[in-house]
Structures are given as structure tokens and as C-alpha cells.
Amino acid sequence: MGSVCKRWNEIVNSRRFLWNFSNILSQKPWYFMFTSNDNPAGYAYDPILRKWYVFELPCNLTSCWFIASSCGLVCFMDNQTRSQLFVCNPITKNFRKLEEPPRLNSSPDYSALAISVDRKSLSYTISIVKSKQVPGDFIQWDTSIHVYNSDTQSWVTLATEVLRGWRGGDESVICHGVLYCLIYSTLVMGGNSNRHGLIMYDLSRTSSHASLMGTLIPVPCSLTCGRLMNLKEKLVMVGGIGKPDRPDIIKGIGIWVLDKKEWQEVARMPHKFFQGFGELDDVFTSSGNDDLIYIQSYGAPALLVFDLYQKQWKWSQKCPVTKRFPLQLFTGFSFEPRLEVAP
Image (cartoon, rainbow, N blue to C red; front, side, top):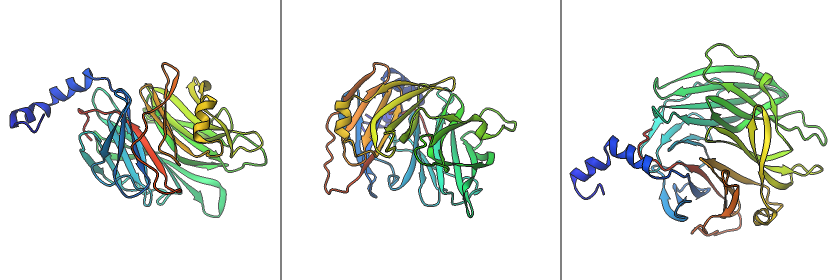
């Protein structure tokens, strides 16, 4: 529409048009699938029309990046230095490079990225949880929380703590103004299934907090490929359920919602869908927004969709991408297709 004439271009790029347009249309999240290489192109799945579109990010952000999304914006962080950050709107192709986060715990062993957009003001908050092993001591890990505010365009360090027996990972999410982060036990012995936990930090508080470990919530089972997501301000976790004798081999995939520090299982993948992933192929990714959760094996372009509201499982339309060699890997992330949100 914008290419018709200058007047139409002014209209479709006006704030009023973009706001009305985005609020009239259903904003079910799309899923962007790409192969793990240096090509920023891939395919985006629209669950309303059940169609795949050839899709390309505005710059090369698909190679070894941490990715988080919220309300139309997607945040990327590089895997090497953990200091380059970009925020972009995949639909409008607008993007912005952010200033580097604090170098406390520089070159961390693990980093967890999260973003949260305020749907009224459209300002956003980005958090990074850095975790670095104390030299010569695998039991103790330096952990720090850093937060960026788009209004002030600056970073603050909210917490620094040495976790004993636990380390951070690469999975976190912001929900209702609270930062949640999965942590992993460094004291796993024998058949101990308590290998994961959840810690939280209230981002609205400015005073000092108690110990992060004081907020620890155990996960409901032996977990693999655990992912956290914010679905309409509900904290949801998706993960593979490990076998009691072989926790590294999953017997199913479950979905839980956190309710007053208690996990409630809301769904478990039916066996007929689980077979589509292959029992021994226990490496998968998942992400979600609104009421939809997308689950995808790294080894194939098949995409499974779960509707949390309707409690329905279904495969997406077949993705046009084809697997060209046996070890080719696929991954992706979900995002809301919105026009009015700017990075």
C-alpha cells in the first residue's frame, strides 16, 4: 500500500493507522524457522491462515545468538562476546543496536536473555543473567543480573551473588515484572533427579533483595530442554520428562504453569505426536506467546503447535524447507507480528 503514492505511504506509516491496524487484527504469534547457518533467511508460520512465508531478518542475526521476544520486538545477543545486542521488529524490519551491558562477569560461561514490552507505553526492559565459574571451583558460580531500560537507555546491575551448588544457564523470562531464571545443580549424584530449579527476582523493587537461593522453586520432575515463556502473564514451562533410570532420555514432553510457587501440569504431549519427534531425539526447542506454544525438534523442520486455551495439539502446515544433509539442524522462535512497536 505504501508504494502506491506518497500520500498512502504517509497514511500507512502514521502512528494512528499502525495502532488501529494492529489492534483490529488478531495477533496470534508467528513462528520463524531457520537452519543453523549464517543465512538470515527462513520461513515464518502464520497460525491463523496456516501458511508459511519466505521471511528474512533485517540483518544477519541468526548465527549463534540468544533470542528473546515480547509484544512484536525481538532481542538478539551474540554467542561469542555476550556484549552485542540488537532489538528489532521483524515485520517492519526496523532494528537498533544497544549499548554494551556491564562487563561484570565479563566473558560469562552462561548468559540468559529476556525482554518485556509494556503494552501501553511500548517501552521495554531487557535483562541478562550472567553466570561464571569461580576459578578452580566447579561448585561455586558468580551470578549477576543486569537490566536495560529503553526509557533511560541505560543498564543497571541489580544483583551479584555467588551461588553454591548451582549455576545459571541460558533460560530466563520476565513475567508480571518478575524475572525468572532456570538454574542447574552442580552437585548431581547418582540418580538424583533434582537437577534444576527456578529462582526469581522482582524487577520493580529498588532495595536490596534477600539471597537469590532463598527464592528457589524446584522443578516438578527430571527435566531436559526446559524452556520458560510468558503466556498472557502466566509463567509457563515446557520440558522433556526424563526417565527415572535414564534422566537424559525423555519419556514425554510436559507443559506446566506456575501457580503461587507450585507447578501445575496442564498438558502432556500425546504419544502419537511424541512419536513424531522420536523417543531418542530428546533435543528440541520450544517458545510461545499469547495462547500458543511451538515445539520443534532440532533435527527436522516439523513444527507442533499447542493451544493452551483450547488444550489442542496439531501439526502446522508442512514447512517448505527441506533437509539437505543428515546433520543439518533447524531452530526458531515465536514472535508477535505487530506494526506499531518500534525498537
